[in-house]
Image (tube, rainbow, N blue to C red; front, side, top):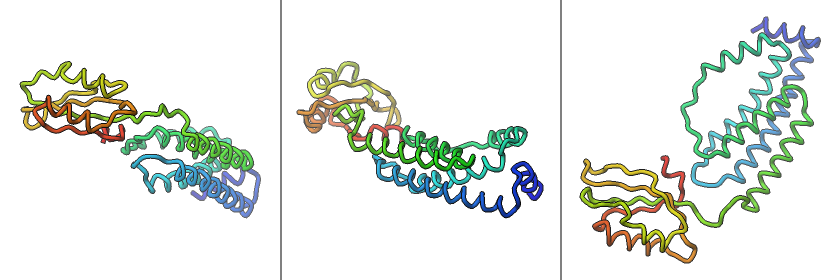
Amino acid sequence: MEQLFEEAIQLNGVTPMQMVINVIVTMIVSLCVGLIITYTYRKTHKGANYSQSFVHTLLIMNIVISVVIMVIGSNIARAFSLAGALSIVRFRSAIRDPKDVAFIFFAMAVGLATGTGNYLVAIVFAIVVSFVIYGLYTFNYGDRGQVNKILKITVPENLNYEGLFDDLFQEHLIDYSLASVKTTNLGTMFELTYFIRSKEEQQDKELIDGIRCRNANLRVAILLNAQDYYE
């Protein structure tokens, strides 16, 4: 560790005190800009999958990357060594919201900018992108006006479910598609899973009542958040 520190001092041509000051300034700038990123994430996040630990991760990752970039500097051999070390890291947590991935790259980009000493670029970039994200959130850009839902229907094993509910779906839904069919209750029943979008003037209760008249009054469930299908 001491050798790396001495090499970094020699490559950058600064005194140990100047090196320490540079590291501290970089970490402070990274922390401040990271707070902008995490504040934007907290204010614009939708759904029930909010995680405080993910917010902390964004902040910590931003600072760590900035220091790593300072250590690497222009040393190509050190950069390849770091890439080899990071290649053995495996992440077990699945990211369900695609926007979380965008925030990860957002934090990485800011960390790279501060690590190379481009503090003004990092600050301006974070502010502009945060305004863009907040604008998309405020104006609900990209929303189609209807909520994507998951419909799960349980039917007896001896019931031919193909086309059984099509007329009900056409009456109550804008569109629908069969996502999966699986057995349940020790193979005595089937569970059908559909992706659906309801018509604005139709109520879910009317659709559920119509289905219950055809599936022997077995379980019918509508999930209001399509991401619940993957949980």
